[in-house]
Image (cartoon, rainbow, N blue to C red; front, side, top):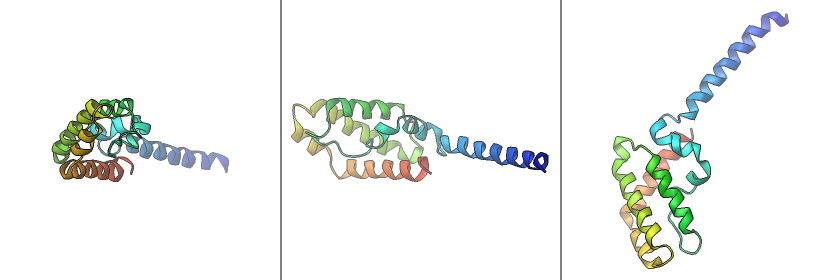
Length: 125
């Protein structure tokens, strides 16, 4: 009886491993891979930077992560806009919080939301 169950269990285990390895790519390894590898930074990667709450180091880590992400064709402009925002944030978070707040305009907000939606809808599924 045990001998008959062993191949079934091994088959089920193999299928589970195959499904999990497919999830690791998140459906889009170029975009999702770096985000999944650094889940701590990814958790806030597409949230606005808040002076006094975030540090220059936080912003630098987000920007470095965005440099590793390969955009999908439909998200290329959004990723560039978001990286531009993070660059302004890195340069102004300690010296000019007003510039940081002004940089988070409607276009940047929409880009961050599009990237976040893709991350949660594709990478985390």
